[in-house]
Image 1 (cartoon, rainbow, N blue to C red):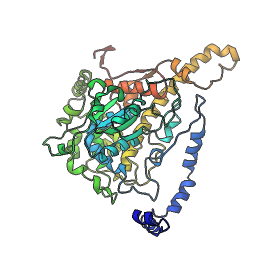
Image 2: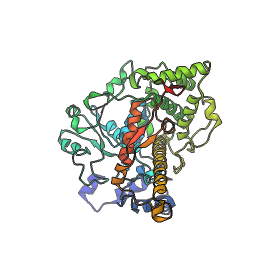
Image 3: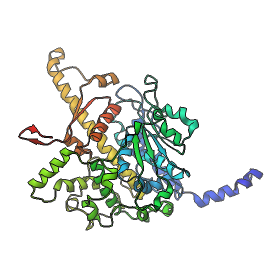
Image 4: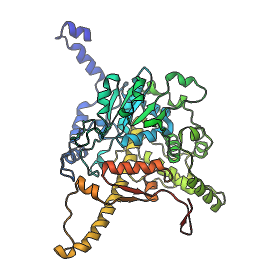
Length: 480
């Protein structure tokens, strides 16, 4: 077709034939529905509205960042990078959650691997998409400008070192940043190992094992680390969440896409013991615990031992509720198969919505779109919970100020003015309890999750945070 057009540009019939053979069905109807969609119009109006600090929202949204599900009548093409999402889960295992948190914090994430780079570039796209901020919660974030999506740079090399260095927010913090700027991080992949020795170029380094490592007797996992070689591991909560996610994904039809055979090796190559769902749910002897997850803290061990003693060895119901909380993020998709004998009893009792699923589309979607929707719902849950905590803290402080200022205006204080960045920096620290951590699906015993909350609130709200983790007390005295 290209040769024909080069020889004679007027012969456009091959292009017309190609379009008729490969165009989407009912294209005009789909475009008409999209143009008349109320949610789309509302989203555009929200983007043009001013933010609390007086700056105008001007965010460029792609289809993948605007919705977790494909538009009606459309499906992923055979070469779409999102088809590698199941492979991403299988490659990283529970480490996908620390990687997701780093992307949500808009860190500079560098994936180092070997050629070919197609799969690594697809991983770059996947990480960028799963960590984007859904439009339903973007208005809850007061500071501007903030990118709704981590910028994907795809393949980078030695010649891109100057560009990669611009992604640091410490380079020129006084400069004006935009959504398209580099100041809010990026995700990229490279085959140049020399970049992994340049600590000033990245915040999170991911070393992907070579393709021939699949032939090893034991699975070789990627290595995720920060500067100075400190390895990042999944929390015990991430490990349990990942097992629940893998079990729940089995309820979705596998034949969702006619073009997914290219990335269909997930179930064949998986080393996770999920043939028996109940065994996966209860198994604690897997090598995943020592290789990929943080060791259990003494406080968590003391608490679990006390609960075992207090319940006379019975199974803890809080773990069932935790699994149901995670599984609820995948429900209410039309291709979800509902209850099955493998499902925990507590999950079968309460099929209600998980907090944070409001505003999410529930139209039919394939496995890849379901995975994206899962992470978007998790993002909504975290950001909405933190927003509610901060709003409650602000209202409490405002009520206290109103008592002292009641004699100034006679109506219980002055009107609340618009919040600026300086106001947020000078505001009191926000208190986040261990119950709030549990509601967000985070590990109350993990220091890394507490640090994640501090960074998240500082980035999106500009506030300091006092995060209270789990503790063991006896008669009001803290033991550990």
